[in-house]
Image (cartoon, helix red, strand yellow):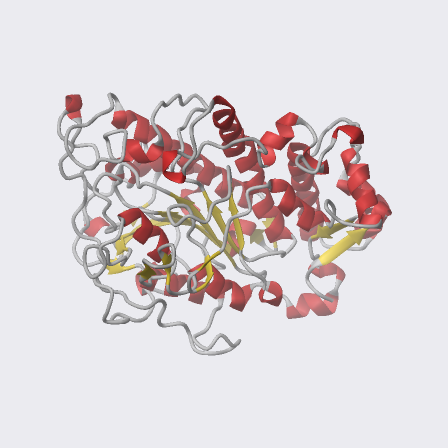
Length: 526
């Protein structure tokens, strides 16, 4: 039996359910270890690095992740999960701008971030290779399915907003509507024939779970282990919670539904939470004019819609619908929600000027506090995802234990646009492959924490906000993650371990891979 299980009910409804090994003894013997997964949580514009890094003194920057090490820092939100986290210090994205290519650093960072390849100035500045998520998905996803790439707000394929590329020069846009993913998990919404009847029933206030009640009852009555009973309950609770966020809780007149709003998001609140049909403000860089409606829609999409996306990542894992996932937050937005009331967009704040200019005097009063607010907001969302995955049972552990959930930034500090000593944290051990509970310096020497907060004092000059050290090619991190997931050099099961990824790993755009292999320092065996 395939690991993917569907419950089928009235109106053509089909709901993806978790595979329960104890029900299928033969399959249980063959599937003693759960699937491994990678989630990349991606944010733009860098951060205040000296506020981000855990405070580790001595021992060449290596040390235990403790509550004291993150107290007052950006990562403090991760305190309950530090024992399952790894902070590798010293990786650098080898993006080659200023050394072989002279292209806007944001374009280069996005295009090269997951490809470690040059970008084509004549093709929308897209990279000349497929990105890591697609390379991995071909090897580990069921039926070699494409990766699940999610975002909030408005979908974009402009180089400053897209990091996933299915092939050289081919952007892979994010899904921004939670209802799309929910529909894939339930087999509802947008179907035809009997499935369309299921759409109509859900739009009238019925639960997707209720539509498959008879099949679910039979499923629950099967003899299963305590662990599988727990897994089934976790799945039902999460599906109910997610459904409440994207499905009207009271019957809605179908006459009020339009093709624009879609049956699943019939109320104004749900439309905004899922994927607003109105204007979205993503900053003037994307050619949009800020407006009150767009700001309101974006705020709801970032908060309620974003939280739904995190739930849907967990549901996709439980149902084994996808094992390679990205959650990409847009970078050119004005934070005006959850108690944050900014008037300048994030990119401009990261420059300290409030606009696209680089260097000179700090142009925004209290800009460092504003950047720290944004950093901590993202840390809270990342911690929410980590906590969710750590709350759901799987096998003898949790979903998180069989996953690697990596917060990967576009840049280190946004004013310097530096790429060395990238602030990276990975939650989950990838099924025991990675070290956890530690800060590990992967480079020679001890990278400093950067100088993000040392300038802009009392409105002074911006100065150098970057850091020194931390130049180990990020290619080696990707190779390590691929091996953790079970990928091979040949792409065939049982093949040799991966040793190389990308086109180059130096400071220029040529030279190929000069430092192959994984980083044993961050593996459990290292």
